[in-house]
Length: 289
Image (cartoon, rainbow, N blue to C red; front, side, top):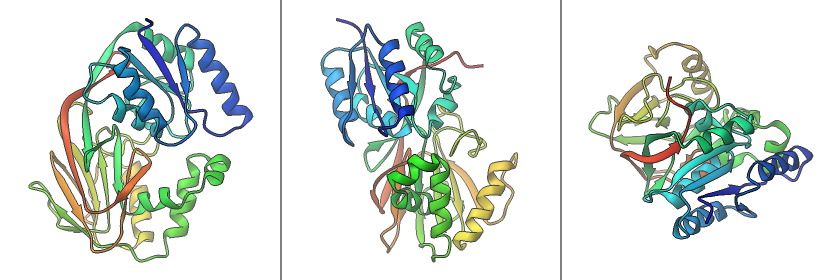
């Protein structure tokens, strides 16, 4: 039996998506390729691939596809491979993969070099890169498929701008390490990057056993968006309205219905409890610099 299987999210039915699909199928011509047709299917395919004894399970898609595949293979000895062809590929950026160079990514998958990284979770569901409670999750919730097809990653910023006039929720934070107990918006990182090539979580290391937390105090959404910009482009966080800390466990609750996203995918509303498992995910990746 071939040891490698590819789980492909064909995404939008566009000429560009069809070209990516053809390229993936050509690269993986000696391996089975299973294409998803609806949300949640990548997780089922990954779990089935583990049962069938595949040692390399390749996610061909964006961060949402990777998230599903990881939830299917978590706890097994299978290695995760990445072919980044989705709208957003932050985890691939974190690992130093050559974005949209599928030939180079396939060589990395075949090289067998692995990196063992942490596996964070929220209410028992795993994620690989980041999570959000509040503004960005609300933007994910309100970003239509048509908007994503037209504008790609910018679609989330467009949705965030439309949400900006609303009153943000009150989020209550419970953690041994938290310097603040109440917030309007919370971002949780496993790696450094958020939203693309920006090193947002300044001190994050993907295998240090810690979650990196950025909280925005009781601010309006317009203020949060302004401070987000400052955090993106500064070398460190020194804003009094923004707190940064690291922890192994975090609980967030609210008296309102506040959405939660993991790797850009909605998982429900608060309350949510975050935890982390040290070095539990084997990823096929280039050697660390």
